[in-house]
Amino acid sequence: MTDFSEVHTNFDEQNLIGQGNFYNPSQGNLKTNQVIDEILSYLNEKPERSYDIIVGCDSSSGEEPHFPVAVVVLRVGEGGRFFLKKIGYKKRKFYNWKTRILEEVFLSCQLALHLRENFEKRIKELLNSSNYQFRYIHADIGENGKTKDMIKEVTGLIRGNGFEPKIKPESFVASTVADRFS
Image (tube, rainbow, N blue to C red):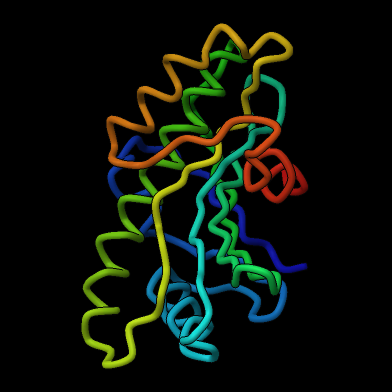
């Protein structure tokens, strides 16, 4: 697999998502605009189908974790595709798991907002706009374990950014797809 990790030394977090590459197993490394092109192409293959576009993130443990943030496009009842970007910080430490969880949610919200804004501009240009929904962010938290105390905070952050939260066991984009690359 090619390297799709991003290590950032500055804190221009408004632009973390727009910089660098995403990874897709079929297409390799892609810029953000190419990810949008691939999503639109996938939706146009079978425009009569319904689609869910979902974002989620996980993190590795330790003080200098990597954050694999993923966007998954599901063709309901037929599988889907994913695109993943691994973000890391060179001069920023995460001393406890709570700050890592909040960073996961922050990055998920940032990616979802960026994609939704740019995706919706592009889909309006198409004559055959597909039946899709882009409303969920999956968080790697749940009612069991130490993350249960963060549910209100995390779900509030996601809702405050205009998305609906999903937590474990329903948060497969964060707890399965992104987790595989953490």
